[in-house]
Length: 197
Ligand SMILES: Cc1cc2nc3c(=O)[nH]c(=O)nc-3n(C[C@H](O)[C@H](O)[C@H](O)COP(=O)(O)OP(=O)(O)OC[C@H]3O[C@@H](n4cnc5c(N)ncnc54)[C@H](O)[C@@H]3O)c2cc1C
Image 1 (cartoon, rainbow, N blue to C red):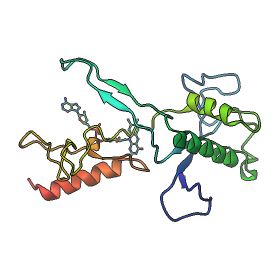
Image 2 (cartoon, rainbow, N blue to C red):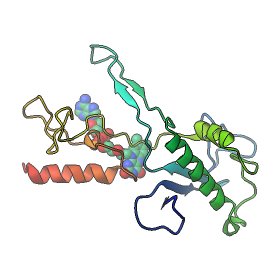
Image 3 (cartoon, helix red, strand yellow):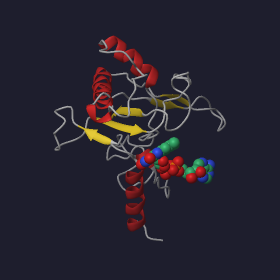
Image 4 (tube, helix red, strand yellow):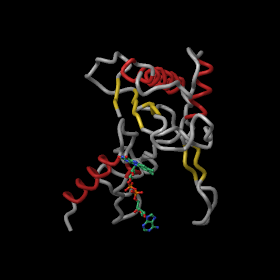
């Protein structure tokens, strides 16, 4: 995975905007079923992954009824903001730049997805809406904060219920730019230091 700034590929200061990665396998999913050219065989194709590190779209998680078995209503609202759609288009453009680079000439036959040449913003948005999947980093469903309406205090106490602490990804107030596991470990370590057994 390479984290990049939209201010320029050589920019190494500040927060990253997009991420581009590579896996040595074809992209097979519900949206992109196997085909004659892209069979579900590892090593027969490579896939450039691309994403947005700091999405501004915000989803919601709601209860659907009073019983514990009532399924939650989850609406991720991916690609909801113009910021995210523009950053995603830039990430796609960077992935295609890498994919078409001379260094990969010996590895590449042709680009299967999205395929073709230049794309309009509308075409890119349509491809991204089809291709985008979750990065499995949900956070903030029980976010910590110093405001009274934040459900968890900065020292991880659940407001309104004595003796309960929350120590997991749900307390992270906003999504981390990179994979979230390290942040979860840091929260757990700091909790263990504060409240030794
Ligand atoms: C497919 C996938 C790939 C990922 N890849 C990466 C990665 O490469 N790098 C990275 O940094 N992050 C990755 N993540 C994200 C990372 O795994 C999570 O953000 C992180 O594990 C969240 O930690 P957590 O402690 O909040 O929750 P979890 O790790 O989900 O822990 C919750 C625990 O609670 C237990 N539990 C649930 N209900 C009950 C119950 N009723 N009673 C008792 N126990 C219960 C569960 O069994 C589980 O052990 C990935 C996530 C997924 C799903």
